[in-house]
Image 1: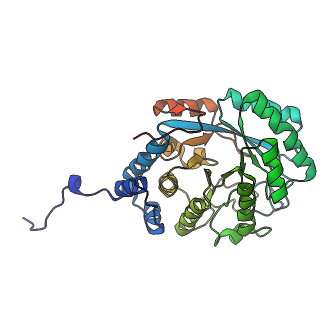
Image 2: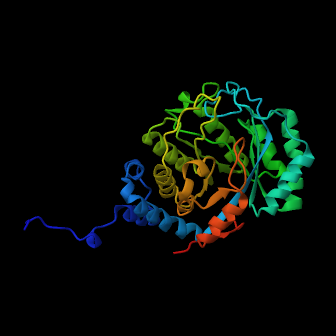
Image 3: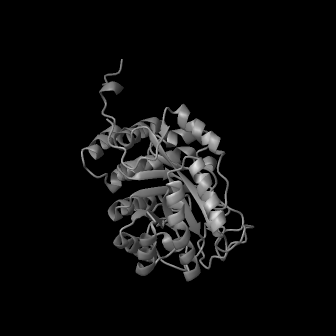
Length: 343
């Protein structure tokens, strides 16, 4: 008989649960701890997700917030972002049109309200909005808010301080501008603007008094260290909402053959973002159907928000499937701003 002492698993401290408890006690997750989650063995996946759910449940209970995305201007973008089917270097067959007329934008808002979305996300493909586009947004946002009682998040590209203030003045609640990846890796995916340009836009939005929505894309060839750096930078910036996308490799883009993600890695990334940004809204965004596949429901043990419907140029699963997934989890859809803590 071996003299080696066997450790009872029940007596072993769960390091992931210990991280969650530490986070809830007000101790920020370190880079090393965050990296250990991303690099954890797949055998630990359920323990990782349980730790993430401990934090998610504390701040958001079992509530899920729904977002609706409207591609208000498609294609025609002068930037060279390697992941994007709407960029100037993409040959992907995407629709190309200038900013939609008011009636179409209002019809999309009606559909967002019908789908029980909390927030209507109005997106254009551009380096930044021109004057015509700014005026179109300024005209339609007050109508959307008054008629449908929706929050409005605008994603219009790089913004000046003056443009950010105009968005605030017309009623925009939040601006989305993703950092996309770490500062170190950014030049590998885009050369027509810098990571610093994106951060400057976030600063303009904050100075104008609007909430910040900023996240990124996982699976573009970055390292786990890059993913951690992005999560921590978003914590330092203090963004209110984090959309986490998983790269959809689109034919005709420089990243068309890139497919390095597994469902387990995507779930670990969501868990890590939750522990790094414990009380921030975390949204599972583009690519969830492709990369999480049958494990999609587990993602909501870390995230508290999803898009309902399609994305910019790719399709999502039917809204009915999302509603059923939320119901089967025992979760509920909410539009409440302050959900409170639930222990």
